[in-house]
Image: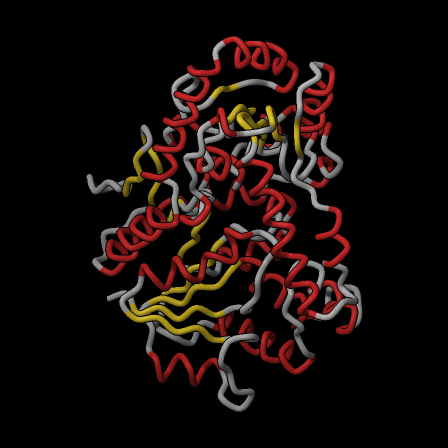
Length: 397
């Protein structure tokens, strides 16, 4: 059975893949209900009662919901509740109340106590888990299963020499890497993905911009921008100033919601109007969302590859181009000389993401994993040669 209770915040997050997760979980389940601030809830009807009434096989929550809720519970967030609420408004259009914070705390206390038969699954696509402390790691360890990148797509910080170039690099530790190794047989290897509605096959000849470097300006992306400028390329970054102004936390939620739409649309427009795009997963070499969103737009992905990208199906010069930012000059010249070959590579990248890294694909992969857990045969999942596999079985996506 796949009866699932999702416990979390109903919000429109600035990262769209996180916002899409509850929908993926719902589609992968036989029965689904959601509980928590923003969803249907009753302060008198506690989560314990909800679990008893619904009797789910699985309870899902995000790492952010669990860890931030624990900070609230222990009052270790270093600020007042009012300031905590203000910070929440920086990345969501929803206006949470102090009463809803108390519901959040109650939910987290119930999840931690684990006085229920349901299997607890924590998703790890939301928090900056490269800097989690021992207490936070122990909270994640209390879960029965983790749904996230998995240790196959992570590395020890000692093996990531570029961390010194990131503004936050000194904060990185190995806590999460060692936890994911420890929980390998309890990990549902869920990479980021491209949402179904973001796919487009617009011809490169109809696009007005040569290059795009979207997203957070990690060290490699900053170098790429400098190189592209020196080559006099037309380029876009997808940062809409008006959207950032409208998303100021003090503004009403209706205005912030409009700003959030503009913010996400600005990245869509920049990628879809560009023939080529450069990105990276920071010095941590994560498989970030842009690694999937760029090919979904049939834009040629040129990137500093993420760890074990070949196992996720990425093949240099076949469906993407691998390039350190210092070498992007070479690929600017190559794309200008071979535009048809570049578009063919982009098309194969589009096909890879549509087949294996779309919302629909993630639903199928999660459903397969939950079925294996229900049957008692799940021993973790991973990727091999572009296919999602269960470690102890021959089932493939």
